[in-house]
Image (cartoon, rainbow, N blue to C red; front, side, top):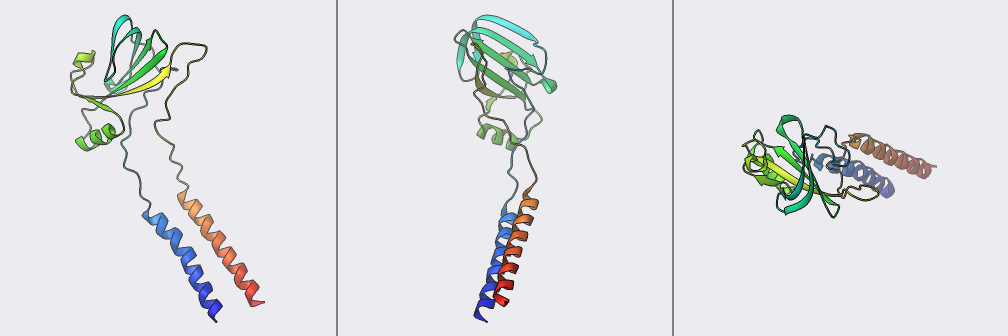
Length: 181
């Protein structure tokens, strides 16, 4: 009788814990950003190429080298600076005039830099967020020094929890059948 009560408690616990964990896991609040692509393999044709000694990068200073500008949709811009030393800097310029202040705060917490007007950077006279990404632009092979911007959402949580519960139920049933023999 004691083993049966113990087994019932074990079964209830084994079923309840995954449900509690699954119910408490909520979505992460993130702001999606446009796909800027990569300076290593741009998705659009270059709009402008500048060479010389005075290429500005937000929060980093000025550099000598080649600066390639790619105009993307919605007035977003990808700036690819390849200095003479080969330590490239990709700057993603995200036009954020339609974003809420909460969304802008989330992006700033993820490393984006607020630029009150893009006019001084050759962009529209509106608010932008800029993000610098280091990459190698000269040498035998260009290599990005960044991680993926976002991970793919797989949506397998329900399937995983379901399989886990079925396994526990099968194990418990097997143990009960063994005890009853």
